[in-house]
Image (cartoon, rainbow, N blue to C red; front, side):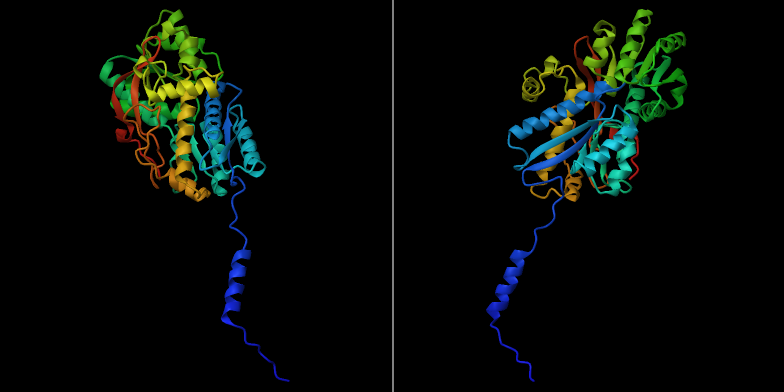
Length: 410
Protein backbone atom coordinates (compact mmCIF):
# COMPACT_ATOMS: atom_id res chain seq x y z
CA UNK A 1 0.00 0.00 0.00
CA UNK A 2 1.26 3.39 -0.89
CA UNK A 3 1.15 6.14 1.65
CA UNK A 4 -0.62 9.07 0.13
CA UNK A 5 0.57 12.55 1.01
CA UNK A 6 -2.05 15.21 0.69
CA UNK A 7 -0.76 18.54 -0.53
CA UNK A 8 -1.61 21.47 1.72
CA UNK A 9 -1.35 25.11 0.66
CA UNK A 10 1.32 27.38 2.23
CA UNK A 11 -1.41 29.45 3.79
CA UNK A 12 -2.30 26.48 5.99
CA UNK A 13 1.18 26.37 7.49
CA UNK A 14 1.19 30.14 7.95
CA UNK A 15 -2.08 29.91 9.82
CA UNK A 16 -0.76 27.03 11.92
CA UNK A 17 2.38 29.00 12.84
CA UNK A 18 0.34 32.06 13.68
CA UNK A 19 -1.97 30.02 15.84
CA UNK A 20 0.93 28.47 17.76
CA UNK A 21 2.34 31.96 18.37
CA UNK A 22 -0.94 33.18 19.80
CA UNK A 23 -1.24 30.08 21.94
CA UNK A 24 2.28 30.44 23.43
CA UNK A 25 2.18 31.24 27.17
CA UNK A 26 3.24 34.76 28.17
CA UNK A 27 6.70 35.26 29.72
CA UNK A 28 6.78 34.33 33.38
CA UNK A 29 6.83 37.39 35.62
CA UNK A 30 8.22 37.40 39.14
CA UNK A 31 5.53 36.92 41.77
CA UNK A 32 6.27 40.28 43.35
CA UNK A 33 5.24 42.24 40.25
CA UNK A 34 1.82 42.29 38.63
CA UNK A 35 0.17 44.68 36.20
CA UNK A 36 -0.99 46.72 39.18
CA UNK A 37 1.50 46.12 42.00
CA UNK A 38 5.17 46.00 43.03
CA UNK A 39 5.85 44.27 46.34
CA UNK A 40 8.79 45.61 48.33
CA UNK A 41 10.15 44.21 51.60
CA UNK A 42 11.89 46.00 54.44
CA UNK A 43 13.39 45.25 57.86
CA UNK A 44 13.40 47.98 60.51
CA UNK A 45 13.97 48.22 64.32
CA UNK A 46 10.51 49.38 65.37
CA UNK A 47 11.30 48.17 68.88
CA UNK A 48 14.48 47.61 70.87
CA UNK A 49 17.54 49.75 71.65
CA UNK A 50 17.70 51.30 68.16
CA UNK A 51 13.99 52.06 67.81
CA UNK A 52 14.82 55.74 67.24
CA UNK A 53 15.62 54.76 63.66
CA UNK A 54 12.12 53.36 63.10
CA UNK A 55 11.01 56.69 61.66
CA UNK A 56 13.09 55.82 58.58
CA UNK A 57 10.69 52.97 57.80
CA UNK A 58 7.61 54.97 58.71
CA UNK A 59 8.65 57.83 56.43
CA UNK A 60 9.34 55.38 53.60
CA UNK A 61 5.90 53.82 54.01
CA UNK A 62 4.33 57.29 54.01
CA UNK A 63 6.27 58.27 50.89
CA UNK A 64 5.02 55.22 49.03
CA UNK A 65 1.47 56.06 50.17
CA UNK A 66 1.93 59.44 48.51
CA UNK A 67 3.27 57.87 45.31
CA UNK A 68 0.36 55.41 45.23
CA UNK A 69 -2.17 58.19 45.66
CA UNK A 70 -0.61 59.87 42.64
CA UNK A 71 -1.06 56.77 40.51
CA UNK A 72 1.98 54.71 41.43
CA UNK A 73 4.97 54.01 39.22
CA UNK A 74 4.08 53.56 35.56
CA UNK A 75 0.60 52.52 36.71
CA UNK A 76 1.71 50.10 39.42
CA UNK A 77 1.09 50.74 43.11
CA UNK A 78 3.79 49.93 45.68
CA UNK A 79 2.95 47.45 48.40
CA UNK A 80 5.53 48.12 51.10
CA UNK A 81 5.79 45.32 53.65
CA UNK A 82 7.98 46.24 56.62
CA UNK A 83 8.87 43.95 59.53
CA UNK A 84 10.33 44.62 62.98
CA UNK A 85 13.57 42.82 63.87
CA UNK A 86 14.35 44.76 67.10
CA UNK A 87 17.92 44.97 65.71
CA UNK A 88 18.28 41.19 66.10
CA UNK A 89 20.03 39.61 63.08
CA UNK A 90 18.39 36.21 63.65
CA UNK A 91 14.97 37.84 63.59
CA UNK A 92 15.98 39.76 60.46
CA UNK A 93 16.83 36.49 58.71
CA UNK A 94 13.48 34.93 59.70
CA UNK A 95 11.51 37.94 58.52
CA UNK A 96 13.47 38.21 55.28
CA UNK A 97 12.73 34.57 54.46
CA UNK A 98 9.04 35.16 55.16
CA UNK A 99 9.00 38.27 52.98
CA UNK A 100 10.65 36.44 50.08
CA UNK A 101 9.04 33.01 50.35
CA UNK A 102 5.58 33.87 51.67
CA UNK A 103 4.91 37.51 50.84
CA UNK A 104 6.76 37.09 47.52
CA UNK A 105 8.40 40.51 47.60
CA UNK A 106 10.23 41.49 44.45
CA UNK A 107 13.08 43.24 46.25
CA UNK A 108 14.29 44.32 49.67
CA UNK A 109 14.75 48.04 50.15
CA UNK A 110 16.18 50.32 52.83
CA UNK A 111 16.53 47.73 55.58
CA UNK A 112 18.28 49.18 58.62
CA UNK A 113 21.55 48.25 60.28
CA UNK A 114 24.82 46.52 59.58
CA UNK A 115 24.39 43.21 61.50
CA UNK A 116 20.91 42.48 60.13
CA UNK A 117 21.84 43.24 56.54
CA UNK A 118 25.03 41.22 56.75
CA UNK A 119 22.97 38.31 58.09
CA UNK A 120 20.58 38.40 55.12
CA UNK A 121 22.98 39.37 52.32
CA UNK A 122 24.04 35.87 51.23
CA UNK A 123 20.47 34.57 51.25
CA UNK A 124 19.30 37.41 49.00
CA UNK A 125 22.28 37.27 46.64
CA UNK A 126 21.96 33.51 46.19
CA UNK A 127 18.38 34.07 45.03
CA UNK A 128 19.14 37.09 42.83
CA UNK A 129 16.93 39.37 44.91
CA UNK A 130 17.92 43.05 45.06
CA UNK A 131 18.99 44.29 48.50
CA UNK A 132 18.82 47.94 47.59
CA UNK A 133 19.86 51.13 49.37
CA UNK A 134 20.75 49.52 52.68
CA UNK A 135 20.34 51.95 55.59
CA UNK A 136 23.88 51.57 56.88
CA UNK A 137 27.21 53.23 56.08
CA UNK A 138 29.17 49.98 56.15
CA UNK A 139 31.58 49.45 53.25
CA UNK A 140 30.26 45.91 52.81
CA UNK A 141 27.44 47.14 50.58
CA UNK A 142 29.83 48.03 47.76
CA UNK A 143 31.18 44.71 46.50
CA UNK A 144 29.46 44.40 43.10
CA UNK A 145 31.54 41.42 41.99
CA UNK A 146 30.99 39.32 45.10
CA UNK A 147 27.52 40.58 46.01
CA UNK A 148 26.00 42.02 42.82
CA UNK A 149 22.49 42.28 44.31
CA UNK A 150 23.45 44.44 47.33
CA UNK A 151 23.92 48.22 47.24
CA UNK A 152 24.16 50.84 49.99
CA UNK A 153 22.96 54.42 49.82
CA UNK A 154 24.56 56.76 52.37
CA UNK A 155 28.23 57.75 52.73
CA UNK A 156 30.44 55.23 54.52
CA UNK A 157 31.16 55.45 58.23
CA UNK A 158 34.86 55.11 57.55
CA UNK A 159 34.96 58.13 55.24
CA UNK A 160 32.88 60.08 57.77
CA UNK A 161 35.49 59.31 60.43
CA UNK A 162 38.17 60.72 58.17
CA UNK A 163 36.15 63.90 57.67
CA UNK A 164 36.04 64.43 61.44
CA UNK A 165 39.78 63.76 61.69
CA UNK A 166 40.50 66.39 59.04
CA UNK A 167 38.26 68.89 60.81
CA UNK A 168 39.86 68.30 64.21
CA UNK A 169 43.35 68.61 62.73
CA UNK A 170 42.45 71.91 61.09
CA UNK A 171 40.39 73.50 63.87
CA UNK A 172 41.85 71.96 67.06
CA UNK A 173 45.30 70.66 66.15
CA UNK A 174 46.71 70.51 69.67
CA UNK A 175 43.68 69.36 71.64
CA UNK A 176 43.41 65.93 73.25
CA UNK A 177 40.66 63.68 71.97
CA UNK A 178 38.36 61.19 73.73
CA UNK A 179 36.11 58.75 71.87
CA UNK A 180 32.99 56.94 73.07
CA UNK A 181 32.26 54.33 70.43
CA UNK A 182 29.69 51.64 69.89
CA UNK A 183 31.20 48.16 70.00
CA UNK A 184 29.88 46.90 66.67
CA UNK A 185 30.73 47.18 62.98
CA UNK A 186 29.30 50.70 62.78
CA UNK A 187 31.37 51.95 65.69
CA UNK A 188 34.55 50.18 64.64
CA UNK A 189 34.41 51.46 61.06
CA UNK A 190 33.99 55.09 62.02
CA UNK A 191 36.65 54.88 64.74
CA UNK A 192 39.04 53.32 62.23
CA UNK A 193 38.39 56.17 59.79
CA UNK A 194 39.05 58.69 62.55
CA UNK A 195 42.37 57.05 63.40
CA UNK A 196 43.38 56.79 59.75
CA UNK A 197 42.52 60.43 59.15
CA UNK A 198 44.53 61.58 62.16
CA UNK A 199 47.53 59.60 60.96
CA UNK A 200 50.62 60.33 63.03
CA UNK A 201 48.56 62.62 65.26
CA UNK A 202 46.32 59.73 66.34
CA UNK A 203 48.26 59.76 69.62
CA UNK A 204 46.10 62.78 70.48
CA UNK A 205 43.37 60.24 71.28
CA UNK A 206 44.05 59.95 75.00
CA UNK A 207 41.02 57.78 75.85
CA UNK A 208 38.54 55.63 74.00
CA UNK A 209 35.82 53.40 75.43
CA UNK A 210 33.74 50.81 73.59
CA UNK A 211 30.15 50.37 74.75
CA UNK A 212 27.05 48.37 73.90
CA UNK A 213 24.01 50.05 72.39
CA UNK A 214 21.81 49.72 75.48
CA UNK A 215 24.12 50.30 78.44
CA UNK A 216 24.44 53.05 81.04
CA UNK A 217 27.42 55.28 80.34
CA UNK A 218 27.72 57.58 83.37
CA UNK A 219 30.94 55.95 84.59
CA UNK A 220 32.40 56.04 81.09
CA UNK A 221 31.77 59.76 80.74
CA UNK A 222 33.58 60.26 84.08
CA UNK A 223 36.61 58.39 82.74
CA UNK A 224 36.64 60.36 79.50
CA UNK A 225 36.39 63.66 81.37
CA UNK A 226 39.25 62.71 83.68
CA UNK A 227 41.44 61.93 80.67
CA UNK A 228 41.85 65.66 80.11
CA UNK A 229 40.37 65.49 76.63
CA UNK A 230 39.09 68.71 75.08
CA UNK A 231 37.40 67.07 72.08
CA UNK A 232 34.77 64.36 72.58
CA UNK A 233 33.80 62.18 69.62
CA UNK A 234 30.46 60.43 70.19
CA UNK A 235 30.33 57.43 67.91
CA UNK A 236 27.20 55.70 69.21
CA UNK A 237 23.40 55.49 68.95
CA UNK A 238 21.16 58.54 69.59
CA UNK A 239 19.98 57.63 73.14
CA UNK A 240 23.54 57.06 74.39
CA UNK A 241 24.78 60.19 72.63
CA UNK A 242 22.03 62.20 74.32
CA UNK A 243 22.95 60.83 77.75
CA UNK A 244 26.64 61.54 77.17
CA UNK A 245 26.05 65.16 76.19
CA UNK A 246 23.74 65.72 79.16
CA UNK A 247 26.06 63.97 81.62
CA UNK A 248 29.08 65.98 80.46
CA UNK A 249 27.15 69.23 80.98
CA UNK A 250 26.01 68.12 84.43
CA UNK A 251 29.66 67.59 85.34
CA UNK A 252 30.64 71.00 84.04
CA UNK A 253 32.66 69.45 81.23
CA UNK A 254 32.26 71.30 77.94
CA UNK A 255 34.51 69.72 75.33
CA UNK A 256 34.11 70.25 71.60
CA UNK A 257 31.55 67.55 70.81
CA UNK A 258 31.69 65.73 67.49
CA UNK A 259 28.53 63.69 66.94
CA UNK A 260 28.30 61.06 64.20
CA UNK A 261 25.75 61.62 61.46
CA UNK A 262 23.81 58.49 62.45
CA UNK A 263 23.06 60.06 65.83
CA UNK A 264 22.68 63.66 64.71
CA UNK A 265 18.94 63.83 65.19
CA UNK A 266 17.51 66.88 66.90
CA UNK A 267 14.44 64.85 67.85
CA UNK A 268 16.24 61.78 69.20
CA UNK A 269 19.60 63.08 70.46
CA UNK A 270 19.94 66.84 70.85
CA UNK A 271 16.53 67.57 72.30
CA UNK A 272 16.80 64.76 74.89
CA UNK A 273 20.32 65.97 75.70
CA UNK A 274 19.01 69.48 76.25
CA UNK A 275 19.20 71.96 73.40
CA UNK A 276 21.22 74.33 75.57
CA UNK A 277 23.75 71.55 76.17
CA UNK A 278 23.97 70.78 72.47
CA UNK A 279 24.89 74.21 71.15
CA UNK A 280 28.10 73.97 69.16
CA UNK A 281 27.94 70.22 68.47
CA UNK A 282 29.67 69.32 65.18
CA UNK A 283 28.41 66.65 62.79
CA UNK A 284 28.05 65.93 59.08
CA UNK A 285 25.06 65.92 56.79
CA UNK A 286 24.04 65.55 53.18
CA UNK A 287 20.34 66.35 53.64
CA UNK A 288 18.65 69.66 54.38
CA UNK A 289 17.43 70.49 57.87
CA UNK A 290 13.74 71.35 57.52
CA UNK A 291 13.97 73.65 60.55
CA UNK A 292 16.75 75.77 59.08
CA UNK A 293 15.49 79.20 58.01
CA UNK A 294 17.84 78.94 55.02
CA UNK A 295 15.34 76.57 53.43
CA UNK A 296 12.19 78.39 54.53
CA UNK A 297 11.22 79.24 50.94
CA UNK A 298 12.78 76.18 49.36
CA UNK A 299 10.12 74.40 47.24
CA UNK A 300 11.48 70.97 48.20
CA UNK A 301 11.27 71.67 51.93
CA UNK A 302 7.79 73.14 51.51
CA UNK A 303 6.83 69.91 49.76
CA UNK A 304 8.46 67.89 52.58
CA UNK A 305 6.50 69.77 55.26
CA UNK A 306 3.26 69.29 53.31
CA UNK A 307 4.11 65.58 52.96
CA UNK A 308 4.60 65.27 56.71
CA UNK A 309 1.31 67.00 57.42
CA UNK A 310 -0.68 64.77 55.08
CA UNK A 311 1.05 61.40 55.02
CA UNK A 312 3.04 61.22 58.26
CA UNK A 313 1.19 63.53 60.69
CA UNK A 314 2.48 61.66 63.74
CA UNK A 315 6.08 62.16 62.61
CA UNK A 316 8.46 64.77 64.01
CA UNK A 317 9.53 67.38 61.47
CA UNK A 318 12.81 67.79 63.35
CA UNK A 319 13.56 64.09 63.00
CA UNK A 320 16.44 63.70 60.57
CA UNK A 321 15.66 60.00 60.18
CA UNK A 322 12.29 60.85 58.67
CA UNK A 323 13.88 63.01 56.00
CA UNK A 324 16.45 60.23 55.45
CA UNK A 325 13.65 57.75 54.75
CA UNK A 326 11.94 60.23 52.43
CA UNK A 327 15.13 60.78 50.42
CA UNK A 328 15.96 57.07 50.19
CA UNK A 329 12.41 56.23 49.04
CA UNK A 330 12.61 59.04 46.52
CA UNK A 331 15.78 57.45 45.11
CA UNK A 332 14.13 54.04 44.80
CA UNK A 333 11.18 55.59 42.97
CA UNK A 334 13.65 57.17 40.55
CA UNK A 335 15.20 53.75 39.87
CA UNK A 336 11.85 52.02 39.38
CA UNK A 337 10.68 54.82 37.11
CA UNK A 338 13.80 54.40 34.98
CA UNK A 339 12.93 50.71 34.63
CA UNK A 340 9.85 51.53 32.58
CA UNK A 341 7.87 48.34 32.00
CA UNK A 342 10.93 46.10 32.47
CA UNK A 343 10.75 45.46 36.18
CA UNK A 344 12.90 42.36 36.11
CA UNK A 345 15.25 42.13 39.05
CA UNK A 346 18.18 42.33 36.65
CA UNK A 347 16.95 45.60 35.19
CA UNK A 348 16.25 47.06 38.62
CA UNK A 349 19.89 46.49 39.59
CA UNK A 350 21.04 47.76 36.19
CA UNK A 351 19.11 51.00 36.69
CA UNK A 352 20.30 51.35 40.30
CA UNK A 353 23.83 51.15 38.92
CA UNK A 354 23.07 53.74 36.23
CA UNK A 355 22.27 56.84 38.27
CA UNK A 356 23.97 59.90 36.82
CA UNK A 357 24.06 63.14 38.80
CA UNK A 358 20.73 62.31 40.37
CA UNK A 359 19.89 64.65 43.24
CA UNK A 360 17.29 64.05 45.90
CA UNK A 361 15.04 67.06 46.29
CA UNK A 362 16.00 67.27 49.98
CA UNK A 363 19.77 66.86 49.52
CA UNK A 364 22.15 69.77 50.02
CA UNK A 365 22.96 71.63 46.79
CA UNK A 366 25.94 70.00 45.11
CA UNK A 367 25.37 66.56 46.64
CA UNK A 368 24.46 64.14 43.88
CA UNK A 369 24.12 60.40 43.44
CA UNK A 370 26.30 58.64 40.90
CA UNK A 371 26.59 54.88 40.48
CA UNK A 372 28.05 52.46 37.96
CA UNK A 373 28.54 48.72 37.43
CA UNK A 374 31.68 48.88 39.59
CA UNK A 375 30.57 51.77 41.82
CA UNK A 376 27.98 50.81 44.42
CA UNK A 377 28.56 53.95 46.57
CA UNK A 378 25.55 56.18 45.69
CA UNK A 379 26.35 59.13 48.01
CA UNK A 380 30.00 60.07 48.44
CA UNK A 381 29.69 63.68 49.56
CA UNK A 382 28.92 65.34 52.89
CA UNK A 383 29.05 68.72 54.59
CA UNK A 384 30.20 69.58 58.06
CA UNK A 385 27.40 71.13 60.11
CA UNK A 386 27.16 72.76 63.55
CA UNK A 387 24.15 72.96 65.83
CA UNK A 388 23.21 76.53 66.77
CA UNK A 389 20.60 75.64 69.39
CA UNK A 390 17.73 75.19 66.98
CA UNK A 391 19.02 73.94 63.62
CA UNK A 392 22.09 72.51 61.89
CA UNK A 393 24.13 75.16 60.09
CA UNK A 394 26.52 74.14 57.28
CA UNK A 395 30.25 74.74 57.76
CA UNK A 396 32.34 75.19 54.64
CA UNK A 397 31.80 73.51 51.31
CA UNK A 398 30.68 70.07 50.20
CA UNK A 399 33.39 67.52 50.96
CA UNK A 400 34.09 64.92 48.30
CA UNK A 401 34.52 61.90 50.54
CA UNK A 402 35.47 59.88 47.46
CA UNK A 403 38.81 61.69 47.59
CA UNK A 404 39.55 60.67 51.13
CA UNK A 405 41.35 57.55 50.05
CA UNK A 406 38.77 55.09 51.35
CA UNK A 407 38.87 52.29 48.77
CA UNK A 408 35.91 50.13 47.82
CA UNK A 409 36.56 46.45 47.20
CA UNK A 410 34.79 45.57 44.00
